[in-house]
Image (cartoon, rainbow, N blue to C red; front, side, top):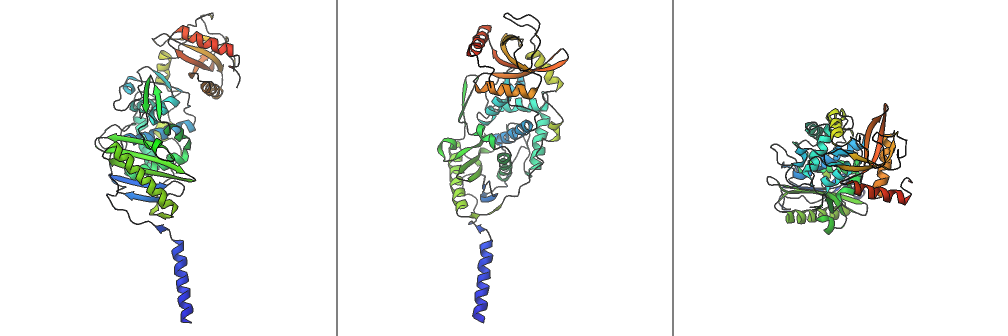
Amino acid sequence: MREKSRVFVLAMLLIMLAARPVQAAPTHSGELPAKGAIAMDLATGHILYEQDADRQIPPASLTKVITLYLTFEALQEHRLSFTDTVLVSPEAARAGGSRMSLRAGEHIIVRELMKGIAVASGNDACVAMAQHLSGGSDNQPFVEAMNAKAKELGMTETVFKNPNGLPAEGQLTTARDMLRLSASYLRRFPQALTFHSMTTYVHNNHNHHNANRLLTTYDGADGLKTGFVQAAGYNNVVTAKRGDTRIIAVVLGARSAGVRTAATHKLLDLAFKRQSEGQYLAVLDEQKGRGVLPASLARRDPREDQDLKAARQVADLRASQVVGNVAAQPAPEQDGKSAQNLRLVERKTGRGEYAIQESSFQSRQKAERRAQHLEKKGLPVKVVATKLGGSKWYRVLVGPYASIDAAKKTREKMLTRGSVMEE
């Protein structure tokens, strides 16, 4: 009878042990040459490694992850589209540190700005995007939204002071908080990896290289962001996928770019190994958030903001003089078609730029779909809103071109192809 009781007790103990997670051996500070580190299986939330994960240090350019997070939320809520045009302010163009080489007065579409943020780590691009979404030259509403979103996601040890991570007193984060942000970002916007996995990006004849070396040296790596400021050292958030397993690894405060790469490589290897063995330390305490833009941005519409509208009218949208065989006054618009068969439009920007009106619509959504179709053909495109005869129209413009001859050449190519209007 006693023997049966012993067997029963042993069996129960085995069942209880089997039901508990297999704990990895405790990690000790200093195992990785970094100030803080953490790694997680995105699918399960299992923490596979951590080292001083709650130590506060400046985030540097990892800040750009939340800048892109808010940009994707604005896109999701249709307050923004990939083909919307952003006017680059002098303040944005003057941003120091890593830049995507923006020029004051330049017009650039949202999609290109996002590439500049993700690949070139453009501090200028971040300011331009923040100002655009804030509705003016002040980017404070955007910074308020950054901190509101951080609070929503449970980033209790993080404070943001600017949209790009340039040094600012009191701007701090932790490895654990960056993991929370990155996990939410990848779950909500997996399409973001299209930008983060790019290794090079060219803008204004400047070739920019992604500082994430693991994109080309680590099997399965496809993002996410690097950063450096003197007060922090070298930071990294890297994600890699092998089979059905996606790992997020955060390394903060390495002493050099090479050490950062090596430490993150080692952390990813360890994380994949522990995941395959069913070992983990804990489950990340995550907050889902509201899933909408914070109030400081939600009450603003960059498309309708009066200051931005006025700036665009002065710098981009004036089309009072039409050149070529077109009359001085705009012709009546036709929904879905060019008013005068791909007419040339002189854009009064102070530099004598020209564009081709390819089509026009009374629906912004249709115009944007058309613009995306033309972009796939390799054409520079933007959607411009205008009022004619009391009605609002959305013109699909190809350009700008610096000379009328360059615009005419493109126009001739578009006309001779004969299939420009076909989807």
